[in-house]
Amino acid sequence: MAVINLSLTDEQRALKAGVAEICKRYPGEYWRQLDQERAYPEAFVTELTRAGYLAALIPPEYGGAGLGILEGGLILETINACGGNGAACHAQMYIMGTVLRHGSEDQKRRYLPKIATGELRLQAFAVTEPNSGSDTTKLQTTAVRRGDRYVVNGQKIFISRVLQSDLMLLLARTTPVDEVKRKTDGLSVFLFDLRQAQGLEVRPLRLMMNHSTNALFFDNMEIPAESLIGEEGRGFSYIIDGMNAERILVASDSLGDGRWFVEKAVAYSNQRVIFGRPIGANQGVQFPIAKAHMSVEAAELMRNKAAALFDAGQPCGAEANMAKYLAAEAAWEAANACVDCHGGYGFAEEYDVERKFREARLYKTAPVNQNLVTAYIAEHVLGLPRSY
Ligand SMILES: Cc1cc2nc3c(=O)[nH]c(=O)nc-3n(C[C@H](O)[C@H](O)[C@H](O)COP(=O)(O)OP(=O)(O)OC[C@H]3O[C@@H](n4cnc5c(N)ncnc54)[C@H](O)[C@@H]3O)c2cc1C
Image (cartoon, rainbow, N blue to C red):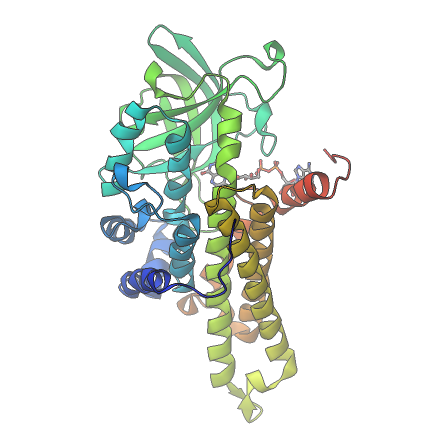
């Protein structure tokens, strides 16, 4: 039976305090500088890894802490609430779940302990393609078995942290779509070593925010046959399996953003005096901040419900999707309230508000856009006709 606790345990509070302690050493200036250079937060991610936080969800028998998804979420929420950006490392927490659930014992023993210590980084997850976008089953990248290798050809777009990762999880088609019963069949997942990859071109993309994102071109890239995770042709279900974790963790990034914006907005509105009184004394200033706070609080309850169901091994597709949706909306509401109350200073780089504003916006679009979440709820929760 899943139980939602309304307050954190002492261990969870200590976990957050430990992460916050590390975050103190990486203040706004650190993230701002990286943002300008579009550079990866190498020092921060290394310290977080060494302290074991990125191995939170890896079971103890493979060298991790064996914590639940809520604890994983609290780590990411704390990073963002402290002004950092958990996106630099959140993927490792949910990608490794695919290896854990569907990998062979040999793959788990080979990779998970090294991921836990930081000897190997698994931060790259390649699904999206220029010609298929959200319609994953239409992806065109192929992996064809030739003896003891698979040969990969195709393109991917918006694939993050490829240049900062040792390993990549890749979704590719192994059986042509016209030869399978269902379009979800014939897709396979591979885990391979990027450092040995020949025939892979990585082109960094300069985006709105610092996200280490790339376009990928596979030109007869050969990977060992043992890179295949689970059974050939069942990759789509493996990816779907990992999506609830991804939604809950991304919701946690957004909750942290929401908390940061509200805190920053309150501090500034109390301190900025215009027309002889703090701007926060005006309802036009305080109401949007108070409303954003309520939205963040409500989204947190949904994240906690989704996490409690997930950790109890119960179905949580609806709750994980709703948590991602509500948290991304709450963070965006808080972002706008924060920019508004800062007036012109909301646009000044040194306040970090504009940087966080750009970073928070992502989660309305990725890893899944809000329309597709809404379509999922309409169809699978409310029983309305499929809209696409
Ligand atoms: C910074 C960044 C990092 C990313 N990192 C990764 C990564 O590491 N790995 C990876 O695989 N992908 C990654 N992505 C890709 C991301 O997951 C996709 O951009 C996202 O899923 C949307 O796909 P798309 O861009 O092709 O949009 P499309 O699928 O083309 O959709 C465009 C818009 O149309 C609307 N839309 C589409 N279909 C429907 C429908 N049926 N009903 C209603 N509305 C619809 C949506 O609002 C959507 O926003 C990243 C993207 C960004 C921006």
